[in-house]
Image (cartoon, rainbow, N blue to C red; front, side, top):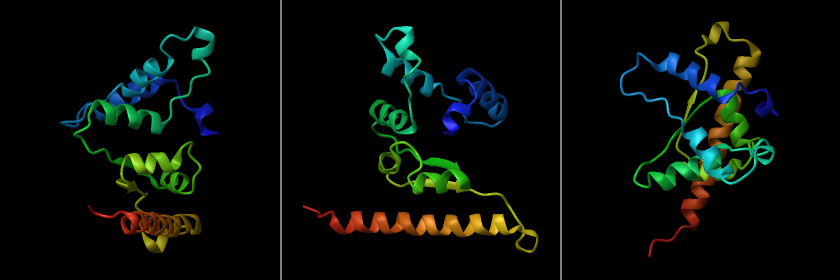
Amino acid sequence: SKRGKQAPFQSRIQMCQLLFKDIPNVIVSEAERICFERVSDGLDEEHKESVRVGTADLLTMLITDEPNLEFTLALGADTFIDLVNGKWRRSEDVLQLVEYRIVVFRRLVEEDNASSEELKQHDEVKECIAKLQQRVDSITATTTIT
C-alpha cells in the first residue's frame, strides 16, 4: 500500500504551503488533521495509531460541514486509474461523494516523443473515463424523477 510510504502529515502540509503560497485564492487546508481528530476522539494513543482516515472519510466530513459546496477531485492520471479500478479503500464511495466530478492531470507529452508507457497510460485514462461514463449513465437511467 502506498499509504505506509506517505510522508507525515505535517511534512505534506508544509510542502503544500510552499507550493501554493504565491497562488491567489488557494488555501491549504488542514481538513485531514481535523478529520483524524474527529475520528480518533476519545481513543488512547495506542488505538489512535491504528486509525486510518481515507479520502471517503475526509469527503464525508467536508460535505457534512459544507453541504452547499460541490467538491471535485483533482488527481494525476496514475491515481485516477487506481481509483476507477477500485484500488482505493472505498473507491466507489469516493466517486459517489464527489458525484463523479474529477479533474485528471496527465503529463504533457508530445505524441512523437511519447514512450510506450505514456501512450499506454493515455489509453488507460480513456478507458477509465468510459467506465465512469457508463456508471453515471446507468445511475441516471435508474433514477426516476417524481
